[in-house]
Image (cartoon, rainbow, N blue to C red; front, side, top):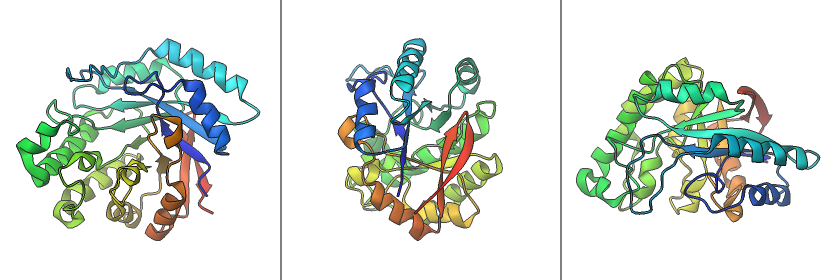
Length: 272
């Protein structure tokens, strides 16, 4: 049983309309014991048809979250987090934000490859699936080595880009990318950083979370132990999506616990 959801967005993220309090109330309704809000911050996100900026009003977000944290303290543990869209030259800029606010948890993630989000149809039209995914994984390696000063705890949705491939993950084969994925995992483990299991892949009909089961199994077999779980919900109704299935997948991969961060310190929670 999974009792916390550690990847959530509200209207403080530019791609969500959900009031923050509605997310907290849904978590209570779902009988979760803890949630961590992880609002988007993507510096230098390009102009896009939806006019999304992915910038964040830090002070307003903090004020509202800490107000709700106190208001609902006897019903749920509300944690203060952020999702930072990494690029190789942004580490120092993100570090200033991380140092300025008392975040419990920071997700580092990759949303852009050479300035293009794989969410945009032209990304896979230009590169095709194999090259598009290879470039995406290469960008993660580059970010890991370039953003060394930033104290993030996990790398989010490691195969995010596959959600938006023309055939989704129908043609995805772990063996096609095994060398670079193993290098990503090796470097994260060496730097004491974990990975996130994100249930959006199941919600998008991939039949797998992000990352794919084979990546999770590889991480386990390489000795990886830091593993957070999130739904990436931008609406209350998507919170804790398919968490029962996630629990089964993780046990099948060999995991016996997952991780919750408080004050950026890990706490293991048994998978029961």
